[in-house]
Length: 211
Image (cartoon, rainbow, N blue to C red; front, side):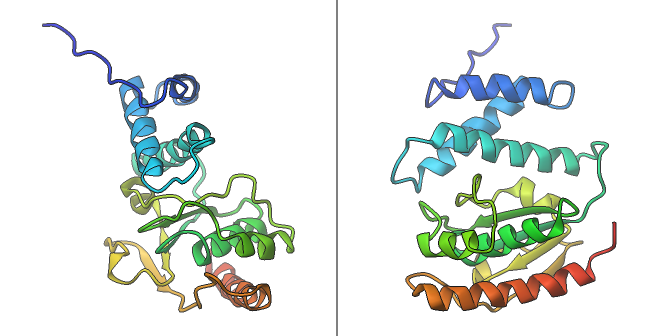
């Protein structure tokens, strides 16, 4: 029986990331699974990208997050840290704020993800400014599409204005934070929204099991 040819990469530069992830996840996932997720991640990001300069790098980052989530779902040995997923419509404002603040304050004791049901092309610049003022690292922050793996791996799903588009799966703890959308708001207003989100983060951290 003749083997089917490998899928054509939408960008030849993806081959390097696929090879890197194949080494990282050797013994856990097949090369075919890794290639499929990298290509799918690239295609999903392309749907809403205005500038494609960094799409190859971002696709590898997104695929890594999805593979880590998939490994957790399949029971890979590792940490038993709580996993929190923030979801909003565009993943450019509220959910990015919440994820960045939780990751910053949790000090590695929580696995944090964020995603959008209809992700934007970039994080709102005023949101990035408000977060940078608090010392949050935004090096790997970009809007991500909502994927099955990340939802299924989450222990807590926190929705922030995505309505019926947000997923509901059994066995998860669901919270909804009614936070104002910072889109097109002046920096003074966005700082207030940031502080409101941070107050929610304080309450969330107090509710999580100590590690």
